[in-house]
Amino acid sequence: MLTIKPGEHGSTYGGNPLGTRVAITALKVLEEEKLAERSEALGKILLGEMKKLNPEVVELARGKGLMNAIVIKPTEKYDAWKVCLKLQDNGLLAKPTHDHIIRFTPPLVITEEELQESIDIIRKTIDSLV
Image (cartoon, rainbow, N blue to C red; front, side, top):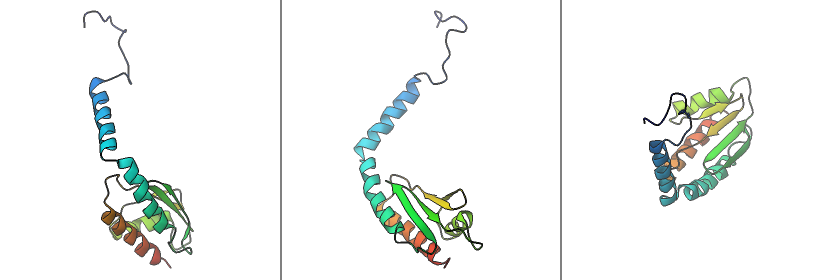
């Protein structure tokens, strides 16, 4: 400590040993639990099911892994915000982006059963708009 003179030490993003150890441990968990592989496999299920949603409401479904979105056809009756409020009422939180896009990003540790429950809520909510 005595070798550092005032003004010589300062780094917002410097190699904080604790932060570095946390990052290394998080990467080990990602590898050991095969979370990237799970995301890819479960993401295929999610995207496949979202592509089956009612085309009167959903223009497009897109995604990679567990990061997915639907593009809805906004009307006077609903927009992305109102659909997200209906999803919330049905037990699922989702993020509207812009007026017509809804983002779905479930946690990497979601089970297939939980994912299916989420898909059922999305389908029920979309079908209620027609």
